[in-house]
Length: 182
Image 1 (cartoon, rainbow, N blue to C red):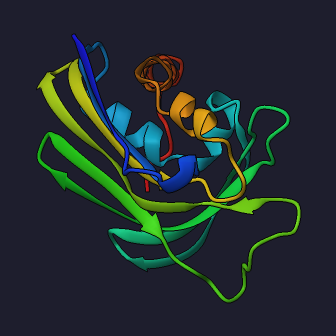
Image 2 (spheres, rainbow, N blue to C red; image 1 turned 180 degrees about the vertical axis):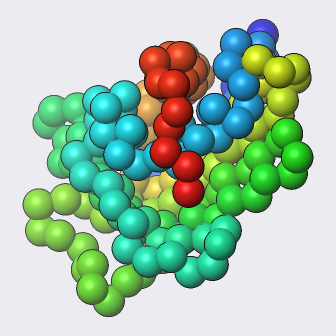
């Protein structure tokens, strides 16, 4: 069963604002550890995420935190977006958490060809339900920035789009034997 909940702050005058969504997918037929590894492997992400333009690690801060750059394609006629995030993760036995939020980095100012989005709080909770199954909970509270009509922001937060995202991640898990571990 999939459950998705959309949360949007009130937008004065119909202007686009940050939107949030969290969802839970029950019954993925992949081990929690594999899903966790796939979400961490930025080289493999370039293969399964058709929206990625560029992604790389900027700095490793601790054994459980780094600063990462990610840019992605948006549908025409929208400008593509990028974000710099502080990402942290935690392994709790057979369950995993990956969370991030936007930060600024002096060596990576906003680019003229992209709109710098803001991840207010985004992440995954992966819970093992057996040796070859898990549940993923996805949280996204993002401000896409730029000039976007309200309907575009609303459309991007549709539950079926998030479900498609989760399913593409699940499919990526079944097409790899050993994703790179951090």
